[in-house]
Image 1 (tube, rainbow, N blue to C red):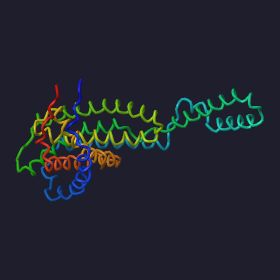
Image 2 (image 1 turned 180 degrees about the horizontal axis):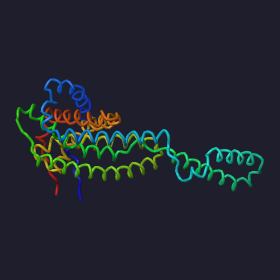
Image 3 (image 1 turned 135 degrees about the vertical axis):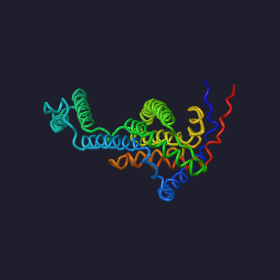
Image 4 (image 1 turned 90 degrees about the vertical axis):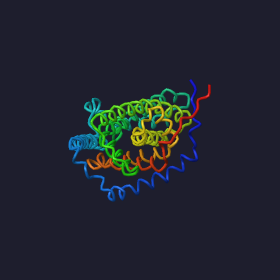
Length: 298
């Protein structure tokens, strides 16, 4: 199996970052100017479904934030094994080590190291991430109907068209989003393993969370841009190649969405609305639909 990345231009990808950010900033004005919220009432079932999903997501977010700052007691904590006891044990060992000859210190130092590792594990178990990237992927899946609706409506304005998606179009878009996010979830796991290995070898574990944040951001931005390409009947393979060449823009949209999703209730509803429209405007301006697949060498 060979991989062809000739379609990816790093310098162009970096140039897309300010361009995509500018489009995001201008999108609220575009929404107001064209009153994109009008006609949404014709799809009342979309609105009701979206609100229910936003509420459930917000409740889950609140629960995770609460557990982050006020962690629930786990099985070990119920048996009252506090870390301050470990601190006293480590302190006692230090005092003893100071009085022992060098040749007698080895075994006691191993015991101290073991206690320190145990304490570290206890500290890690007290906190969990505020909420996982997988939950964000699920949110996009559940709100795909909302995203697709505004992507089509925005493209109608930009291309002077009058397409009215039917139920079957929403159904196809939903199935496609499930496939896209399912693949990105698997890719995310693979990338997490690779990044963990590289950071472990290079001693840069402190960078792992930041790197993964941007990787997951790209995957989320992919979903918004794919809604634009879907309207031009791009296959998932064609869409992947095209969006890879627009990695800068995809990352901007995804990072923006990932941050704003933290706002309870408002975030889960506003993010798909804004990012779906912004990604469509970017796709139109950059003429993503004219992308040609790179020729594979035999």
